[in-house]
Image (spheres, rainbow, N blue to C red):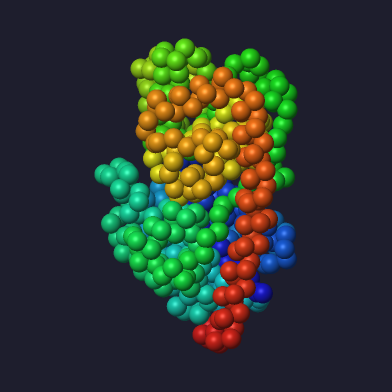
Length: 419
């Protein structure tokens, strides 16, 4: 196989994870690229240049390059404002590909705006297009309403990409159903391939040692929330559950919130912290909620391992990588019964599923776990086994390789459009 092009217009594999526009997609692209490179495939990741001094091409991992595409101003721009720059992104990519000595066999676009650019390359060069949306505009609008800053044009664009891509990757069964019912995708063109975790990065650690390393109280019942600090992640719901746990159920718990736009938990850098502090005050648990700030990937294993329970209750979640990472670390997960979480967390076996925006059921499940350490241990071990069996990045990459090979073989048999 010649080069694989991973297109990720706003989510660079080089970005620091945890800020507003840096999350699961960055992790997905980075790890998929690394695993494909390990298998010997040459991979180029095309992402938008958002700093003036970035090199044109960066060696990222064995066999993997990051290509910084000039499209719009060379500064950070909210992803909601990037759509007008996608034609320029696509045109640059076409010219870059035309002059590459090896050539490309597959375009794999991540997010609808990358799809806009990739479709131009597919039309110009005849290269098969694989599309992963990561989130659908109609689902986002349903949950966020007027807070959704993306233009309405996103809906028609996603419908077009769902119809015209050679293969659409669904990250979970709910994603596949949404692609069919909301975007008109053909079931025969959908492949379900989950996200994953790096088994060299995430594995169980001894809890007492992890707590000592972080300076945490070894005796507290400790709950972890980790990820981007944006409203849709439902962190306010978790804080209210901690309040209900204390004031109604009589159980004191410590909540650590990891994430944000800076390593120090600053309202100036991460305005959502200010809102969440107000929620904690109103719930009477300001003294039990600790905002940690953003942390590097290499530090996250300690946070997972130091926690009794990992909680994530977003309004919606196309997949959700953090529950899988927590499971890989042997930690039970209480997650919202939405999207990908309902397919990764087995209710009653690796953790519990609860309704989103419902602090009382969440608190009741936390109380159940707090009262039964043996149950926490059994669920943590079951989650670790499930993560290892189904969700390693190496396994995800193998599934994706099969998709790529089928499409590349079909394109070669049909004859490519001349560049």
